[in-house]
Image 1 (spheres, one colour):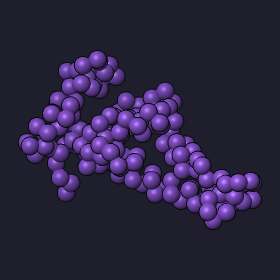
Image 2 (cartoon, one colour):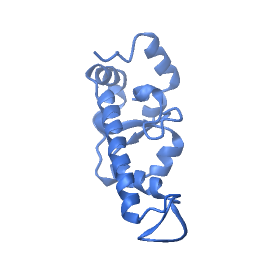
Image 3 (cartoon, helix red, strand yellow):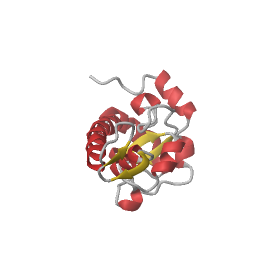
Length: 157
């Protein structure tokens, strides 16, 4: 999982994805399935918290846009956009961002990657939903480096 997206955070892509995040929060009905995990940096993982990715993205992207005496009709950004125009602009960005997240989850869900992961961590309680205390520490930078040296993750065909 942590090697998906080139090892970078699936959200900001600026930092290493050193944590695993439930894309759809577990607290909001998201599953513990590999299809719902993405690599994330600690700042993005902490900021997103229990929000779904679209709500978090739009809230983050629209934060701080209003200048001076902004109203629903204008005042967003240097272009003095209306709230509707700002939302439509950010909505299009969010759709592109969702496409990116779908690509990352497809990479995480790759059959060879999945089998390697399950073979490595099945004894620790995955996928029965009993992820124990020893589960995440076992998934370390050292184990990633060792796996990459041995030809994992497989290159997509």
